[in-house]
Length: 421
Image 1 (cartoon, rainbow, N blue to C red):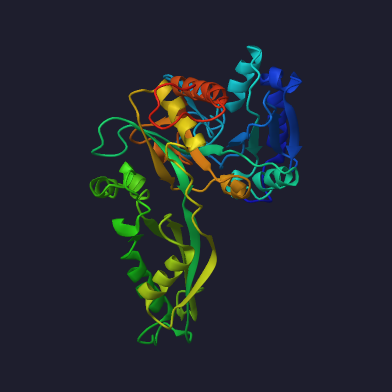
Image 2 (image 1 turned 180 degrees about the horizontal axis):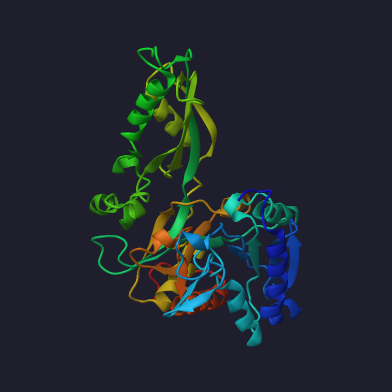
């Protein structure tokens, strides 16, 4: 799955499907639509009060590959319903997004928004969004567009996923981890396996990789104030709880994964070269440069060359205080639908194409009310990806309410009991 082998015929078929299932959107004089980067979609819905700063809702239409032979209970592109669940690649990531369905319903009811908004559907998010989201942003920048906030996929409702936390929690992503791929390599004299040297390139590299693996999760102390006094998710007690599981461990630290190891061409030849690749997902409290320096310190062997192959810093932290318009609108929408939920900011451990929008907005949020129970996170890019029919309906209702909630002119004063929300 690369930039060059995207299934373009499927993307064209998807274009036709959108027009078929959302006739109001494509026939409405209110909605402006254009294709960007050949396959991505940009919608503009102008509001009745153009002085209000617009916002933008994002999703993506591409998915990662899936093979039924891997053990799916239903063909991965069938959207088959089993016991109240729809099975298929994209049901979690990211075709479950109910943005267009919500807009269709609003148009059917004659709704005209007060605040303008955009909808962006990228076609290559899974391969970094360099042709989809990046070109949408380029177009918007050329038009001088500035956004109040952006809402994309990312975090979700976690129900029983965080051990020790009573009740489900909705985590709204206020930042996104950075990423680094580091190459470790060793060069030494080749030889015959009948006369092995004291240390070979493989042995030297293996020792370095072992040292790196023994420091698999770069943890940082709570005094680093990213945690901030009212960010309950990163309290010392809960941080220790989150560390117990791979699913939640990634929320509180920079993670390390050795992903490739290459060396040797023949069983009786000692190779001259050995290389390994290590992938890091960098927490918002750290920088790309700090991670590279820590790798060099951990390896601590001049025979091992440390190279940064590619990487980028974590995204800026979006505002989430009582006067953060986007965060509060999202939070109020969630609480209006699910009053039993705890709502809190969090770190998006994966990467989305929303990072391309950082030049046209100060606030990017990553959330949809997909309901994750134990075992569900493994379905993400995995086998038996699915969504319940009830949860899909909830997601559509979320966007239906969110679009209407955005029509207030400004947030009420903090702690005010009288407000438009």
